[in-house]
Figure 1 (cartoon, one colour):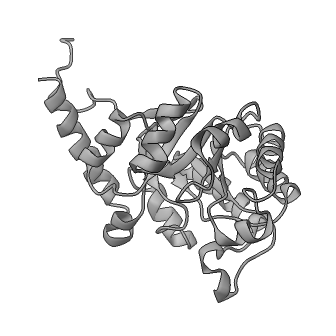
Figure 2 (cartoon, helix red, strand yellow):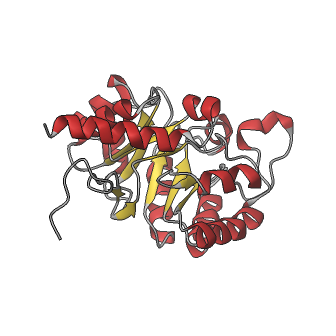
Length: 259
């Protein structure tokens, strides 16, 4: 059989790995975007997304309108559904979790790791978390939470950081260092992603969000050092079909780079 050329299907690998976890594509949804219902999650799982990021789950159900950003049926309902979805679709899933205490994060980490999550995303971005756990206000809370999460989980853990970053870059790295957490989710801009990447070097892997509307945007983020991207506004507008478009555009971008 003759060797494949760059113009033939399947010759350009759009996959990536995050903390050693292989993903078939480097773009995925952001937690809560087109993923709030079982129907939306099934549509994502049927798309070309690199992973299905679940809505942020809490120990107890959050159904009051006041907590719209954390609206979920509770982890005990979401985890079994996520396992079934992954088994049927073959798409890995990432569990986004939020708690008011380190103990709640540990409970959630264990439940979703046992349910087959490929990766955990500890949501430290939401106002509820910053009003209860307050991981960036009291010394040691971030370190304790990250260390306990990593110790409790059998799958890699990432931290979704607030925007703007609540600490100086070096201070943030010092807090995370040695906890077992090696992945962060940050905004795709100079102040958060690019500067943190310059300071951290290869110590942390980064998933970025913001400004991802085309395959060229994905390619640029990866070229700057991101391991993967999350899509928010464009996904909300276009729906899960966006991932097929992003993949087509990335192939075109990478073909152009090889010529």
